[in-house]
Image (cartoon, rainbow, N blue to C red):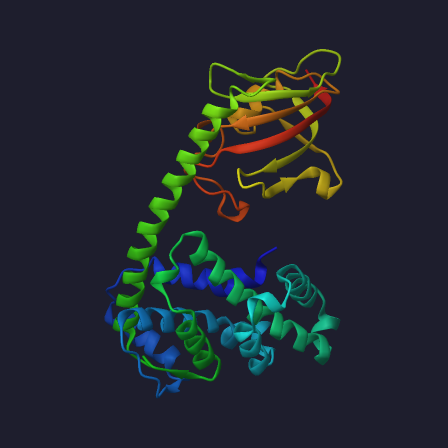
Length: 318
């Protein structure tokens, strides 16, 4: 769902992970790629301003170099990036961008292409704002200066033109600051999960296994229970402690099939407690879920407790 965002914001995150040093070969290559930019007259008065500007500038690059997005109207991308966050729907913007990317005919439609241009600007603004807000790191950047960097990039201007070393150093500084915020954030997710389970185990109807898995029986089925090697068919919805749904077979309209030896330990253990036709809620501590290494595309933060509503439809084999 975040194809457009991954192009721009993904580039930024990759850049943040690079070392502050740069070889002469890298500098030469980078200087060549920067040669399309003229010098900007903008003045930056602090490291925060410089980091913010560079972040915005780097986010503009795919709209200059990407074969699909470079064809979009730059003025409308800029307008979208500068639009008030409260003035549009992120989901609607995402639908427009996905439609544009998946249809050659729509890409040839100037009116729709212009909608897409404004939408990708809006999406990148909302995503960068969300990223820093979620990490409680908004003080690291100044959004108005991020906008200036983004606008300069689309206008083929750059304060740092061919100064590759300064850009590398700025991103190293940003990475250090973000890493610190990230560590605090995941510690908070882990603490919230632990506190939730302590209270939840005393809730009427909630049971806890030796491993720490908690579950609640909503509906009892009939028949045998699956084994750890069984293949099953289920409907499910997965949510975070915040209540946000990160995955749902119900929303897709199609049950999922898998082997119980192919899923997270909390599912392997929990579904063996069920029989066909039953419906449980599982409260899965991070040790029995994805721990420190969830899929970055899933929206699940490291050390997150996960809540699943699961309906066992069928045991496909013993």
